Length: 293
Image (cartoon, rainbow, N blue to C red; front, side, top):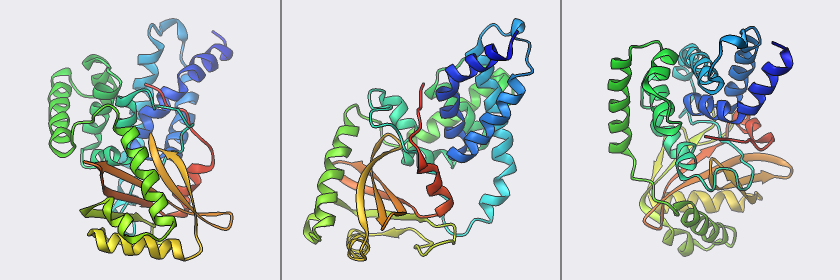
């Protein structure tokens, strides 16, 4: 078989493979590295023995993603402040018609997946998001089918207990509330901002210790509103972007991207802000990505 055929099969499935790895790692940059390494391994495979390219490559990238996740565990333990997943800049309509895909890459879901073990996270992603069979997943994570079924059940219950059920149309609701919120913030309308925040709204910032940001989550509508208005008054330009399947706000000082604000919405109120300020993680926003399920 030719190298061209290897490349053609891999390229066709790349958006799906990238999405799998990104959801396991929470990092677009590391996902790119995993895919590059996986392709080099794939290029050495005899295609005559590959009967299902999608399953084969999903297993391959999952194994490599788990290796990367375990290798990076120490770095995350030593991370300064709160570690948040890298934001993902999407094409304007990418994932908008697939509510399962949009929910699976949301910042709130990725943060929740961080509370699972690496194997549970991989099993949940492969089973609940992409619908792979237990046999394929068992081979990908190096566990028995029985163990995979147990992990899938634990992970599903863990997520269900901590995350409200995703409702179709909530992306449109988030867009509407984000638009109203952006108008209130940019005009300095304190009452308008407060009206859109849940009383116990939480502000979680990730700076990696490289820029100034709160190192611990901040809770409370008045505190969060005051901080947001102070940021806007500091000569920052705010633009709307599509990050992780939902509207988000990008803050610029001149031409330099200073941070990205992703909001989680429930009952017509913003319940969480996830603020990415680590310059290294903002590099992931250099170009839009394509995701698939």
